[in-house]
Length: 118
Image (cartoon, rainbow, N blue to C red; front, side, top):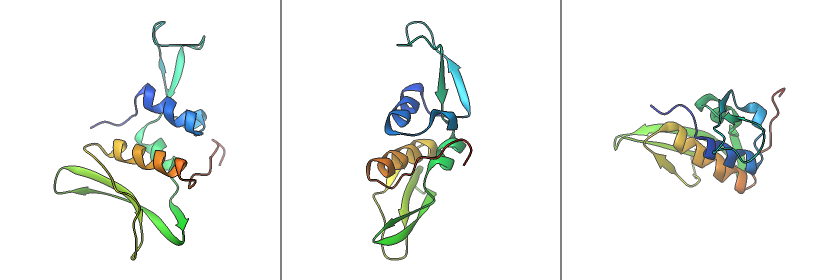
């Protein structure tokens, strides 16, 4: 089971506006991997991604975070209510479905940056 994002995926979230201080892990990069002087890079774990995701969004109607395992060996993550649902993000690993949903939430204006003291 995959429990953390890659350095590249973590950097993508940081580029989208997620505070790197919310990542609960740091990894050491080799001299060939880094493009700056800091040899450490934040990596988001499953619990970090869940914490960063808005628990509800308002898109004309209030929708709530939902994720579940489907019979076709896939995790599905989205926001829904009785009457509607957002785009469904499916992946074999829970963290990958939630990562895609978080990227969607950010790019669609549903994400409010959190800091490590909120």
